[in-house]
Length: 153
Image (tube, rainbow, N blue to C red; front, side, top):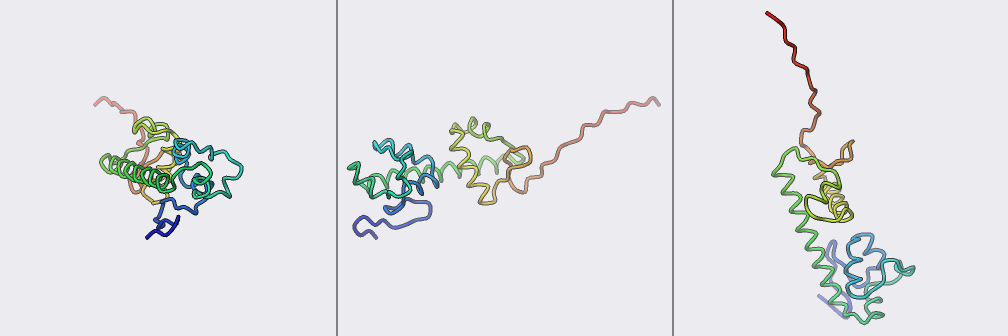
């Protein structure tokens, strides 16, 4: 239900009364969407105080259009999370570093880090002692190399 500028709040979805700083802390990729609308908010000193509704008013951007663009970005993130989960499920023992994830799936390192942090927080992935990401529950152990011993009979 919508009334005025109020938009129904969904988990992970932006709403009119969210500040720019809150939005960017939760979803760093939103900076690109703001810039696409001509909003120079990402580095602004008043970002902690300005809401999405405030900046839409200042930049004459329709609030509903900005919110829809942000929702579309959230749906894309959900799709990317599903994609990563499926790859880890299809390849037991898959262990990837952050740069490898970015390269494999074509994401920026920053986006890869954001996606992986969601999967770690969900308990699906863990970052091991080598700083690589692997699925929780996968058996991962270093295999000792043993030199064969040849004894004459």
